[in-house]
Length: 571
Image 1 (cartoon, rainbow, N blue to C red):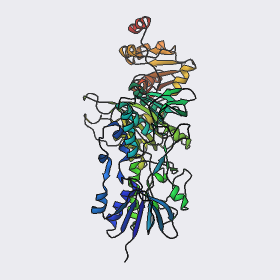
Image 2: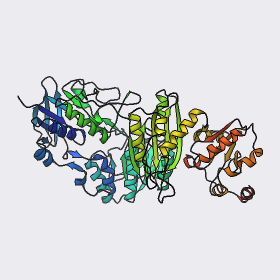
Image 3: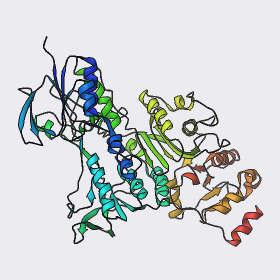
Image 4: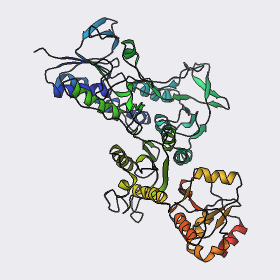
């Protein structure tokens, strides 16, 4: 029996994973990887940390060296070799040796496309100037590090507030650069986070000295006499800079597949079935270049993540050697380190859920990562959303200095198995004071939704509350915090009134039962209790501010005047 000939185009994550899995499944197959770069299996997700100097050497980002693939796995690797043309009829790939320009051909029984993605580079005037970079390869990271050092750079501008852009903000800042981020949309991570959650992260970035410009599009670049970028222009601004990072996203690298006549999906990625086969059954594809099924909407989406690429690679390696494993789809799970904050999300955002036609119910819960009486507990903000009619979980976002990753992973697991809010509320999570509270923040977020569904809890979003204040509507914004908390920070608005929770029952006569009342505290716990007290006393139109001050996405803190202090201490 002749050996099966497997050819894999592309390194980094999916390709090497597919090759290694295929070798373990079939010890006799002839396996070749084609890679146009100089490195094969690299951890490109670590590039921002390499620029920052947290990772000091290129070698640390090379997951497996060429010797491993040859000596241990018996896999042929052709680096600095470009796959130019695929001929599905003859089962051949035309190759170009980038060192010698020699053209050759290699035959295959099974072909794997792991061609990844390409950075989106807007067609802007001056884009060819020195000092303008993208970041998808180790070579890009090396060039950025060298340029900063060689040119004594002091200012960096990042175009695009996506995951890489935010990670690179910290990388540049750690090198002593003043950082500005320009985002065309109105908040950071607009494809991943809802406004109020993004605003929580935005405050942290500003506190770290990062300037954020939203709703602005770059129109071009201007250079100095030496050919280096010197200025960025937008419709509203001109900014001087020494370094520019283009971080407006990536697109699937599908030219080879398209030229070979393979089906390309509506989002621009290669179309694959559940076995990760393309429209040609002898050609498989995985990683950034393919479209994936969203497990919630069942619609296609793109997922340029190393985690997804590795899963693809393993399934492809199994299937090209006779297996029939399937890839179910993805939830869009993502997490990033943004200075001292952890920023994670999974499933759908509220914006995405409503666009998909879901009637949603949400909760916004500021909390702490573990028991507050155990030293060192850090804050997190949880946003949870579910389908109103069924209680099915649709997604969640967790951000803050505390442990967001484990909450995102719990939610990813729950979403993957179709859990409902009540399932999450009663999930038997590990508890000990150094690790958690008796009720995990996810339990609390789920219980808020359950209270809303039952009619016990009635909430107003921060955005709706801000709109009422801006429009000078007639309502009472009732602060039920302590006088000390009020003294430190409060709303300065004619609608605002302070009655601490412990004094509310004794001061009910100071409120009109016909008034619309919105209660708030630090994190909504006391505000919800105040809502229930008022409703029990016959007040008909009472809501609490979801997330209260801890999740308020706007400026709020105002120090009291001497007259206000006098009123305060009479309470």
